[in-house]
Amino acid sequence: MQRPYSLLLLLFMVVACSLHPEYAGARDLSENPAWRVPGKWRPWVMEDQSPELAKCATRKEWAAMEANLKKIRGLWEQIPAIAAPVGYEISAVGHYQADFCLHMVPVGKHNKAERPYEHHYDKTRPLVGDVSFYPFNHASIHPRLQVDHESHGIWFTVNRIPTDNLPLLDHEFLEPIRVTDRFGAPAYDVGTAACKFNGECISDDLLIIRNNEAPLWKPVPLIELYDKLLDKAQFDIEGFEREAEKVRREFDEWLSPKRRKEREDMYRRDAAASWQKQRTPEEYVARSMENDRNYEGRKRKELSEAGPRPGTAWGERQGDVGRITELRARLPADNPKAYAYLCETPGHFNGYGVYAGQFTAVPRPGCRAVVRANSDYFNPKLPRTAIQLITVRAYNYCLDKVPFIAPGQCKADFKLLENMDWSALRTLMDK
Image 1 (tube, rainbow, N blue to C red):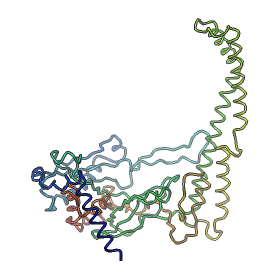
Image 2: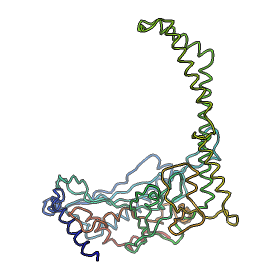
Image 3: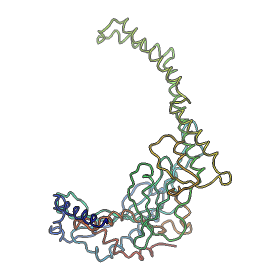
Image 4: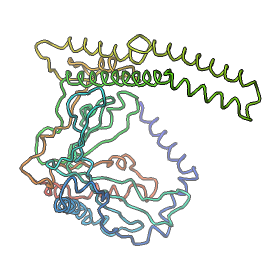
């Protein structure tokens, strides 16, 4: 019964696009002479040449990573449909990813001064890099469309396990959902963790090509989430304590006879200044000293109300500590390290305790497991530069755009995806 209406809707959209001035011009792009101009592949370059690279790996290791990325580009250049582009040119460049070598390592628990973190560059884990496929059309293409690239880019990333952190947590996220496989590779949706919280689900499917069957993600015990959130709440409380102590010290200094004398002398100098004409010097000094007393009263009231009491941020965090402690006590006695699941759709942040209450160790239909990237996925016996995992990002943008409304929109990307030798890509991987 729905089919006629669907056809009518499709017909309406096609007619609307043809009448819209922007898309009406897009229909005629195939007649633009620029689309008949022979294109080219732009020269290979490696971007993100930061000084941090040397802290992460040797030049020889980065050179080996670059060589592997160039092999992926080499597969693209062998695709007849895009080997000699016409009407556009292709930028396919590599990127170093030194950031993935940097890890913040906590040095013990939080303390009264600051959370002690040290930044370490891991020189043992596999190196991460990516190569992007980005077709650019010639500058003479229909200026009214204001398009500076022929299609959406596609990224092939090496040795990066996909993650999408949950709010308030550091390395935890909802287990990616496996969706329709493409090109003989499993596809996962990793972009819906955030939509559990704000309702804005953005499609971010990834193709995942791997060299072994070890799990990419590992489940997280609920008690570890509780402990993380408890630590954050306690750290906030200590921050409030430090700030309150700082304010008290500054107020005590402000009350000291020395500072009081300095202010009184300043008021007398100001009272005698030529710009002071509104009142007599005695009146000016008296009014200034009265303002000081009023400030002192307000500050004393403010400090007396600070602390662990209802209605203050300090009190709210203490409530969070109590709530999370209560939740921890409710964990199953027979399985205190039961895994965490998220079943609800939390709204805006209402405290660590409320947030912690959204997780459960007893999943129901529709719940999602909380996971972390499995660092043990990679084979430590292989060189750091070996290709052990390839993820393909942003490919689904163009697949969703078929059929195209203009020659320049996603056609090069589509040719890449449909014609690439995916089995040859798998042969690049080490085992």
